[in-house]
Image (cartoon, rainbow, N blue to C red; front, top):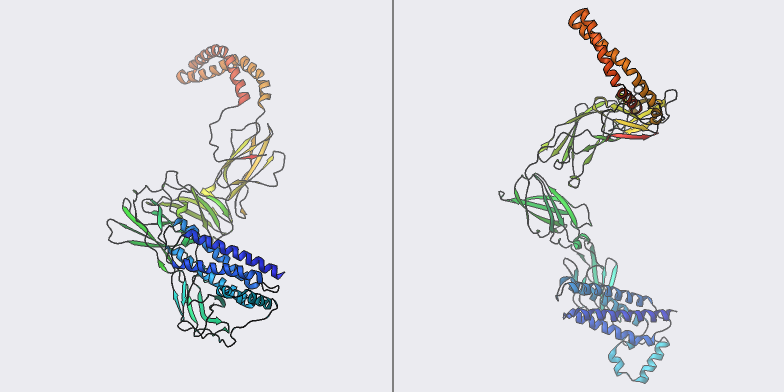
Length: 637
């Protein structure tokens, strides 16, 4: 029922009025605006209590709902004031007073909505406190009956609407608009302000202050005002235009200052209140000076992260081993903030130039574009601030600046676009730190016709289930990846080649069959292009050690038995050759006889040792030189 709804809304409104009054009591402020707010709240609370018993069943709840909305807005502002007052304990804090003015505007609108409801519901005679006090009970009861019957009591039918207010002005400030006007001629119950098709009843006042959320910073508003009484609304005043100005940024601070030899990274904090309002900081001005300088040098930077209060900016081209003083300012559409506190620091000595870079890795490739990953020349190198790629063949000379957030990264991406797919390029890669450029590393990039890999062979360090393939990159060329295909000696090559990254130069095939011959071929790939296959190479896995160990006694026995025969014979031949060189035929015969006799003795004594040596090599094979498997790709089969 509308009556039940109306009673419920009025009950909620009365509760909100009580809450707002408690908030104002917590502030303990003696300002006159607080007293006015308390008087208005007391009036509305008393009015609600007096009209509740005389509500009609066909009462319109729309105005009461708007009345409650204004009260809830005022309550939110009160809660904000209480929170601020806990932090800033002084009476006339600007933020608190501004909110008090906004609360007054909301309460004036709420009061006007309450009056409109009372007038439309014919409850006017019950709203004046003095009227209640002087009225006799019998007369009051008759008026109540007339009101319930829907009769309208008009005190003066000859009342005319107010004249247009004169002298309407708008005063702009940093965070609100102040509207003022001269009183209208004739009786005025309240004034109504219109701004960009919105309107608000502001009570019988000739000055109001408007701020968020009614009006927003940066917007242009067309405003006018008129008076209202029992005779209706008067004519509008002259229309004026006003704009809510944006406040200047607050004072920033330098939270961190990192100095290198010729650069300084300045991290600043921008107050959160400015970052998240309608007047954000758009630029930061970093200034610096030295003891030998007579003025400040200024660098302006654009703010890219709108809602972040911490930003880092890099100032370059400083002098090494020099003491500097830094300051920062923030800028928005209204102007400059106050300068931050100064902070001092001294730049470092110049580091040595970077060493020659390593060859880059090809990360991506198409027919006209390659993306390379350049790595730091060494871990002890000072931060790399730029890379340079130069090519005579392609008329390419491009610098890649490194952002200060990536100074500590070990690698950086370098993209080269607009390549001719049917040309090959010789690139020179250089790295730059604060002291200058390094020597250049030279490499080649083939697009449409990548060269065939060179010197492909199978390593001697194989096992019964593994084969290691090794190759060289042709002419220091870079590739996106290699492709390897394999087969058994009597089988077919795999249909899908195995991919190996372009910066690797060997691969180990695991889980192969023992004592089996395998054939391999290799080719290079860049984007959609591949080279011809390399020449076929062949490798054989070893026989299983357990099988060799079973035959090792026979090998030992063979070595032990044949040693007395093989060793004297070999020694006699060797002795005969040396004797022949020394003294002709006689020396040859003597050398042979002496070598044979010595060989018999050595061969007989060393026969068991020779047999054991042959058995060991039969089982384990010969140990090869150690290798570095850091760049090895393991390929399970």
